Amino acid sequence: MTRLSTTDIAGELEHVVKHWTPRVVGQVNDQYIKVAKLLGELVWHAHDDEDEMFLVISGHLRIEIEGQDDVELGPGQFHVVPRGVRHNPVAKEEVHIVLIETVTTSHTGNTTVQGTVAIEDQVSHLG
Figure 1: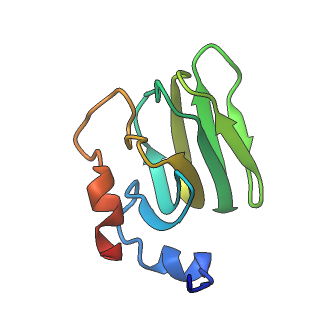
Figure 2: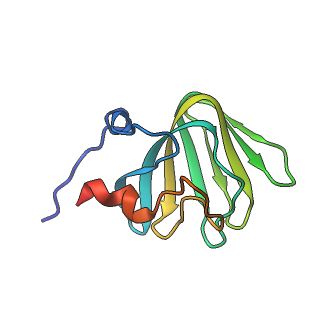
């Protein structure tokens, strides 16, 4: 029998100590549920094969989208960046978010930079 569990998003965010370091807190089928704290900007990148969902828990997030208007998100709002679309998340003040991404989604997509967090490191605390 599968054990049913509840996850406290605020509690999980307390375990995030470094900005731009997603932490896997659950899984639904082939999608990871991640929490992260953001401050500043990440890097322009795209995920060639996966969509990416950003849900703001607290703060305000701007997602710059190549060739389109920026997306502005506040608490309780989410946006899905379609696969292949170059984007850059920007947080002028600390933002707490939930990400929903396919288990194969690389942190910075097709761009590897210092600070890129491997999927294995995002789930390492689970094992």
